[in-house]
Length: 329
Ligand code: HEM
Image 1: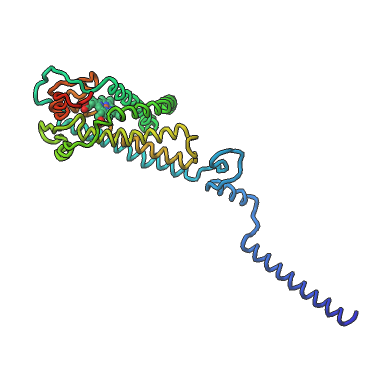
Image 2 (image 1 turned 120 degrees about the vertical axis):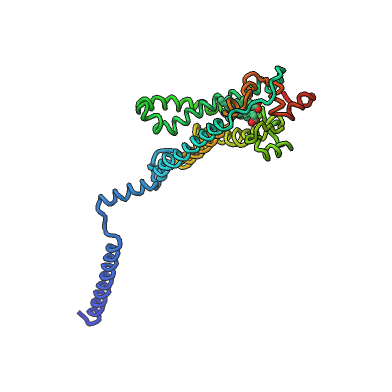
C-alpha cells in the first residue's frame, strides 16, 4: 500500500474513533440525566399527571373533556365541609341567639294607644300574593338547602344514613324545582314594593334613633316602609335574593355557562354563603313580622291595619293616606 493511502486510512480511522468517543460520552451523560424508566415508573408518572389535572385526549365533548380528575376537588370538599359549614352554622345560631335574647330583654313592641277599630288598607291582594309566594317558596328552599348542607351532621345521627338519603333525595328535588319559582316571586316582590323603598328624609332620624328599638315606647316617624324594612328590601330581598337565585339557576342549568368543574364548585360556595346570609337576615324579618311587633302580621294576613298601628309605626304614611295623598294602595 502506498504511504499516502496508508496515512489517509489512518486519518479516517482516528476521526472515526474521536466521533465514536463523543457519541459514547454524550449517551453516557444523557443516561446519567435521565436514566431509563421501569414500566412501573412510567405508569406512576402518567397517573400523577392525571391526578394533577393535566388534560389528555378523550371522546368526551365540552369544556375539560380530556381532564379525568379535577385537581381542586379535594380542597373544595374540605372548604365546604370545614369553614363553610362551621361559620355558616355559627352565623345562623348567633342570629337565633340574638333574637331570643332581644325578645327576653325587650319583649314585643306594643301599641302605646288602644286600637281604634278603624282600619286602613296597607297591602293590595297582589302585594300579599307576591309576598306570601316569596315567603313560602323561600322557607321551603331554606329548609331543604339547610338539610343539604347540614343534614349529615345534624340529621344523620338522628335518622340514620338510609333515612337521610331518602330525605335528601326528596329535598334535592324540591330545592331544584322550586328555585326558579322563588326567583319569579322575588322579581314580582321587588316590582311590587320598589317605589316605597326609596330614600326619604325621615330615614335619617330613623337611623339616628336605631328605629326606636332600644328606647322605650319610641316610635320613629316613617313613610310606608321604615329604614329597617328598606335595608331588608335592598340588601336581603334584592341583592342577596337575586344573587342566591341566580347562582342556584346556574347550578340547575350548567349548560348556560362554560361549565368547568372549578366554576361549578365556586358557584356552590357562593350560593351557600349568600343563602346563609339571606337566611340570617330573614330570621330578623320574620321575628319583626310575627312576635316582634304587635299587630304587624295582620297587615300581611288581611291587608289592613288599625289606624293606631299605622300612626305609631308609619306616621308619615298614615298622614298621607288620611290627607288623600299617594299613600298606596
Ligand atoms: C314566615 C315568613 C315571613 C313573615 C311572617 C313575614 C311577615 C311580613 C310582614 C308582617 C310584613 C309587613 C310589615 C309591615 O306592614 O310594615 C312583611 C313585609 C315584607 N316582607 Fe315578609 N315575611 C316573611 C317572609 C318574607 C320573605 C322570605 C321575604 C323575602 C325573601 C319577605 C319580604 C318582605 C318584603 C320585601 C316586605 C315589605 C317591606 C319591605 O319592603 O321591606 N318576607 N313581611
